[in-house]
Structures are given as C-alpha cells and as structure tokens.
Amino acid sequence: MRTRPTILLFGPVGRPVPDLVRRWAGEKQFPVEPLADASAVESIILRGHPCFLVINSDAADDVSMSLVRRLKSDSFTAIVPTLVLGGPYRPERMQAWFDAGADEILTEVFPISEQLARVEALLVRSQRDVSVHPSTRLPGAPEIEREIRRRLDETGEFAVCYADLDHFKEYNDRYSYYDGDRVIFILSRILHDVVKGVLGPRGFVGHIGGDDFIFVIPAAEISLVCTEILTVFDTLVPFQYNEQDRRAGYYFGKDRRGQLHRVPLMTLSVGIVTNRHRSFAHPAEVSELATEMKSYAKTLPGSVFVVDRRQSRSGEDRQGR
Image 1 (spheres, one colour):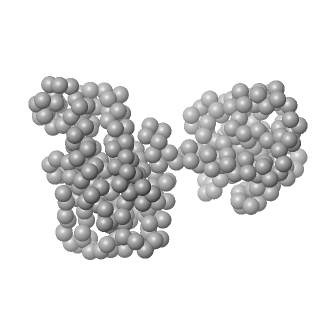
Image 2 (tube, rainbow, N blue to C red):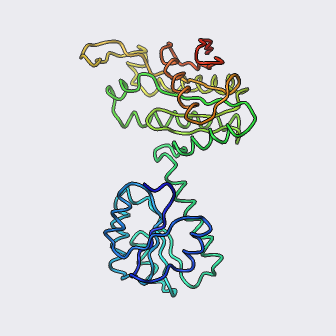
Image 3 (tube, one colour):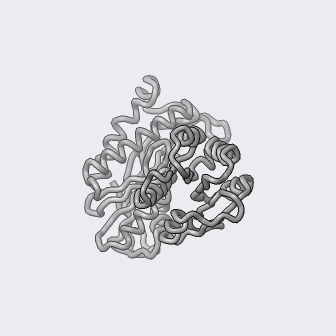
C-alpha cells in the first residue's frame, strides 16, 4: 500500500518521463510510475489509494480519453486528479479532453513556471475535495486529525468537543433518511456558525460522518460556545417534527424487540477533552478520550456538554452543563 501520493504516468512504452513531471515529482519526493496499459492504471487506482494521474499527450487519444472517461464516471476513482500534457495548443483537442473529464490540461503555450503552479494548484484542490465531507462541506477525518495535531504542537490550552445527536436513529425510522440528512445539515450549520461567529479563525469544526462532529476551540471558551450551541439546537430541532410530535414532546417508536416505547425529541450530547490537566502525545489519545466523554454525556438527560477534568484515567471528576 502506498504511503504517499504516487504519480501514475500513462504513455507510450520507453518514453522518458517529461521534464515537467520529473521536476515537480522530484521537488515533492513523489515516486513516478510509468504505465502503458490502461487496465493497469485502473487496477492500481481501484486498489484504493488516490493517485496523481498524468496522461502523456503522445498516448493514443482514443485509448487515453476512454481511460479518463471510465475513471471519472465512477465516484470512487473520480477523485483522482487527472492532468493531460497536451503538446501544442489546439482548442478543439483541449475541449475534447475537458469533455472526457480531465481536471487540467497543460500545453506548450504555458511557460514552465505557470505549468508548475497549475500542477501544484491541482494537487491542492484534489486534497481539499477528498478531505471535505460532501453533504456538509466541513473538513473530514484527515483534517480533524491534522487540526488536533497542530493544537498539540502549540502551547495554548484547547478543547476537543465531540458532538453527537441523541435519538437520531429513531427519528430516521419515524420520518425518513431525507429528513435525517436535513437535521445533520442543520446541526453542521449551527456548529459552524456559532464556533466561527464567536471565535473566527480560533475555532475549527469538522464532520466525522453521520451525526458525529468534532469542534476544537480554546479551552477558555467552552462554556460560552457550548451553551450557545445547545440553546440554538434546542430552539430549532422541535421544528423538524410534525406538529403532533412537537406538541407532545415525544412519539412512540419500536425498540429492537419490536416493543413500543416513548421516544423524546432529539437532543445533543457533547463530550469535551482539554489539555488543562493532562498531556497527549498523539491525536488518537485525544480521540479515544473524547469518544469516552461523548458516551458519558449521552447517558445524561437533555442536551448537555460534559468536560473531562480528570488528571488521570483513575479519577472520576467530570463536570458538565
């Protein structure tokens, strides 16, 4: 399995690596793997690790364009950034490549400095697209880990807050996955707007997946930010139910045994970990403890945030809203 981006160069057998590719790959210390078989390119990409694909303009257009079309027609492989080295500038050929799905085309009309800049921009765009959750446009797990690692490298006190919806599955079962997706989007906007509105660049909000979110804030701002988040959430969430359920404050749902029971309206649980009383060597340690605190918060009624104030795992000094 590749541990760093690999440049796949699709082109004729025996041709040297183009100067642009060799120069840029050398600066990035990315390995270059020349391939002349389109099926081999697809096989490598389908094994799961996103690559950087360069199409040498000397490759037969019908074969290489078909390869690009196949890759871009599948959501799993479409995220692979595809660059075409187009040789002399010909507008109709560039249009054909873009129609096939190419992400960038470089021709001899561009000076070398601009070509390098365009390649770099393509890589940045592809990394951004992969790391952002598609439904909420919030940073995903890779960016969350990077943010926590960045905070660990700094000297300030910070808080990692794990937010999770309560009774969300029952809501999906009673209403629909479409309504559930709307609730997740609403929660993402609440978290983003409150954290960014109060803290600006000092706050970070990420989406792990489903109804699980992480936000990272200065430890001193926990009460202000979390109280506002829970207040806004509790104000808005009742309107995601029909009038009957909203007025009653609950509805009847079935548990796993098929037994009817009262299901309250959704609430929000936030488990919080800080570096005030303990140190962390790796983001995984923070994640593990935040998950523990989130699980503890979910045992409490209503929308709550709970801060871990223990100095060691043997302690039990938790404090919440």
